[in-house]
Length: 408
Image (cartoon, rainbow, N blue to C red):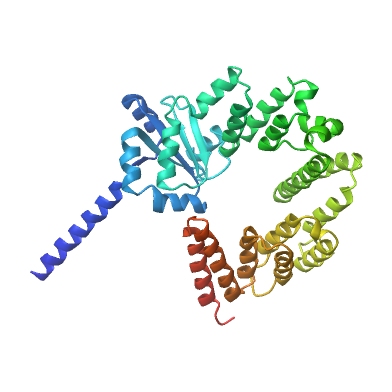
């Protein structure tokens, strides 16, 4: 009797588990099958492009897709498909085909497999459903916006919305190509207008792009409409982060050719901030006599650089500290970064900087202080009526690390 009761209980529990899992979104895992079903049922395809290592992807799969509200809506309206972009198979090729550059990318395809709408990043159930409603609205989705742009709508409000939508979807290549083509049609007064400058900021036009070079060559026109300090700082910051990205790419590919050749062109521009930027990039290239990366040289160079230039731009400290946090991973091995952040917070107690401070603290095994900072971050999130789910996970992570390394 007892054995039978146990068996029945197990069966009921299993049924309960199946019922819960069936409440959420039902996903296909084969692209061609999804296409066939979409044509057969005359539905759009919702695609979750994800990777095995992506944190927000895991959050969506664990906390959003299984919810009944999501299942009720998506199972009725769409054929749903999951595509793993690091599976070394079909998923990798599909990621390339659809130019997926960020994860998760949440895309909506028509029944022929053409992209209708997409965005990148984790969403709540409510936001996901709102995204789906936009995707199915022929007057609001990306495909409709592209058609309207191609049809000649160049009103500023629409143009700003169009480029913001592309950038949010990580379709920066199209955004930049469309903007540069548009910029080329403008007369000099229109090119230097406030509206055009706003669009340049949205698409993040940068060094060596035609529109950016035009601004450099006609700064006087832009000074009149935008202001000298704004234009000068825009040009300076654009070069700073353009080369930082180029340098990071060169390091990862072990090929600094593009970085070095562009730096030569940058030097020829004779900007007064060239030496400052060159010194900043040199910090990241800290190697010993044998050519091996040396964290102590990095910290020494970083400290010297911040002593000279740190007060000019908070991003210097944040960038150098973030890199140091990646590099360290034991008690106080990157302690200089803690000092850098504390000096920054003393002069500018910006709540947004706490993330970097928290990171460098726990990466140096300063778990108690990291917990204090995490609680501040959580309090700020509550004050702003934002979700605390992410910081709660980080707090638990630090607790687990503290227990794991309690004897160190």
